[in-house]
Length: 494
Image 1 (cartoon, rainbow, N blue to C red):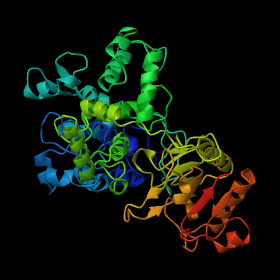
Image 2: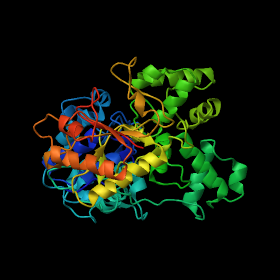
Image 3: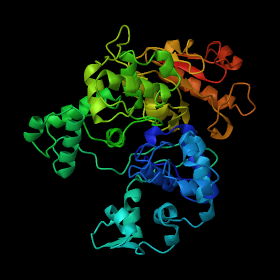
C-alpha cells in the first residue's frame, strides 16, 4: 500500500481522515493519492466539506457535489455541507463506487468527477471544443489555446498536486501516514519571475508589503519580500523560513478562497487566537473547536467586522485579515522558564522512525522548544536503525506554551504540564506495529517493544522522566506511576 504524499492542503486533514481515505481507496481499487489530489483540487486545498463552488453552481464539498449528484446519492448539498469531512468521505466513496476497478490513472480518476464518459479514452481524448457552453465553462483548462480541451489538459492541474514518491514504504498491515515533500515550486530569495511578482501582489493585498516596496524590485525575491513572507509565516504559526514553501502557499490559497464557516486548519487557528485576544471569543469557546471555523468563530468575526465598519459577512477576506492583524497585536511566544528557548518549533507530521496521531489541523498541538523537537527526531532516527515499527507522537504543546483545554469540559484544563513545550505523549507499541490506541493491559499491547523504546529513551536522554502505568516497566525503573497514563507514555524531555 503506498504512503500518502503531501498534496496542497493535507495539513488541513486529520489522521482519521487520511486513514479513511486509505481504506476507501482499497475498497475502490484506486491509488489513495488520486483521491487526495482530486479533493485537494476541488476544495481549493481546504478539504472543507462545506466548500462552495466559487462560480455559484451550487456544488459543495470535497469533490464539489452538484445538487443533482447529491440527490442521486440520497442526500442534499445542505446536508453534505453540514457534515464533518470524515463523514462526507462516505459519500465520496459512494460516488466513486460505480467506477471501481476502472480508475488506474489520475486522468481516469478525475474524469470520474468531471466527465465520466471519458474514462479509459486516453489522455488525448477531446472533452470540449470551441464554441460550446461546456468549453466556455472550462476554457481555463485549454492550456495550449487550440480551442480543444483534452483529458490530459483537464487533469493536468490535479496531477500537479501529486507529490514525489514516498521515501519510506509502510507494510500493508499498518498504515500510518508518511507525508513526503510535495512536488511544488518553492520561491526563495534570489529568484525572479512572474510567480514572484504574483506573490508580491498577494503580500500587498494582505498588508505585508507596500506598492512602493514592490517597485524597488518587482518580480524579484529580495530582502523585502523575504521579510514580508517571514512576517506572514510568524502570524500564521508556520515555519519562519522566509521561503514561499508549500505550507505558506496553502495558507495564502486558503485566504484567497475566503476563510469561512466550515473551514479547517491553515489560518483558522491564528485567526481564532486574534479573536480571543480581541475578547470577541473566549478561550473556552475556542477549546470546543480549535482550528475549526464554527458558528462561534463566525459570530466573533462578524462582530469584529461590525466594530471596524466592514460588511459583516463572517468571511475572512484580505480586507478583514488586514484589519484584524493590524488591530490585534501579536502575542510573542512564551520563553521556557530558566532557558532562552521559545515554544515555537513545530514537529513535522512524519519523519524517519516516527509518525503522529490525533494531530490537530495545522499541527497546533505539536509545538515545542527547538531542543525538544530535535530530541524527538533524534530518538526516532535512532529507533529506525533497528526497528521498522514507527514511534507515534501525540500532544506536545501549543505555540507559545500554556495549558491545553478539554473540548468536552472547557472548564477543566488538561495537560497542564505540557505548557513548557518539553513534554510529549507517545502511544504504547501495539502488536504488529498497528496504528491503533492501546493500553498496557490490552491484549494487543506489545510490552517487549514498548520496553525497548523506554530503554532507548533512557540511554539517549538519561535525565528524562517517563510516566506510564505498566507495572513491569515501573518495577524496572523505566517509568513512573501517574493517574490517567494507562494509554500513553508521557515523556518529559530533559
